[in-house]
Image 1 (cartoon, one colour):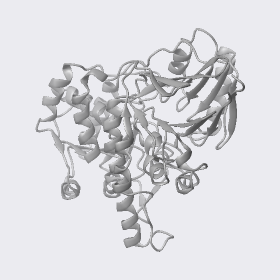
Image 2: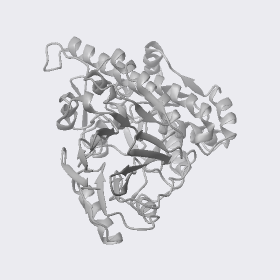
Image 3: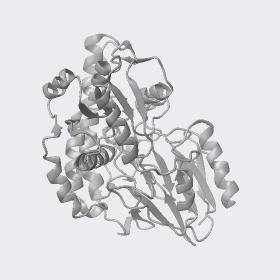
Length: 465
């Protein structure tokens, strides 16, 4: 039996996670994500899938983030009709995220048509809410440490990745005519010190390792997020302005809420209103209560749930409620998505706040190349939105202490737990020179054979097994 892999995304780019595994008689896709960021990446979302979607027998999902799941509606629309495997929290999050993604795409296409800033006379969304809903009947949920058969010769197992509620490291065993081989997909690896999620699980053996590298060439030492938040919030209030935080609706928003409420209760920051302006974040927050067994807070999450109902935390569900926040001029915190400022309600808040020198924008995590967030981190004087260049006059703060990604030292710590060296390692989910430097660092430290795959590059993992 031969086993081949084709890297259809997250190859020399951070987003668009899609890895196609072909064996004799069975083909599956690991992750099915959207490309985000640079236009040259985003246009790939519009391309036909490289093979007929109906030829894919199954999809295995590592976690719910859109760069790992956001292409599912288009794949189904193109003819895929097999099972989609993920953990239970991931299944619930997929429903929230895909419906939100479809809604945003429909709204943005309509807005572009109305304002006339699209090159297309009739701009269309990549997929609709109806397309997103067609995904949900195909989902099959799997628990951590529950070995599941994809077919008679392929089985897989999920272990906790510590990156997001329900996120998984995935072990895949492929049994040939003569021997069995093991692939490990790291997915996105979480940090070893975090408030809500567990440490990433240790893996002891792999013949082939596909390892993420979002922070693979960066050292981001852990510091207590409360230190940064205390300083930034107090400064924003002192400036008599509003603190705007673009945050991923799932994971980052809940972590921010946890810390902000804790600091308010301890009188380290003023008790000011916190607006959660993201329907998706609101829904995701309740999933942290539903799946208390999947994170560290456990019973403490019940107290957190009660705190959520406090007067300081305001959930804005409707568009009218969101627009009303524009009237808030000072002494408030707004948390809105998307986290990389690629779409969603945060764009409207940016258009209102960027040119106000009293306001503060806090960027609380990684920003991919080509996103508005990266432009702001690189001190661009203006930001392009709705066909206009908005001047950046507000104070820009950044805080990397709440990243959901392991840094280089933590990734090395995770890899050091292998009892024997993988025969082949592929680095994915990285960009530019960083991913190549990371690959070299792995090879230098562990003596492993490491390659950086390119977009649509194919490799034979095993021959004649």
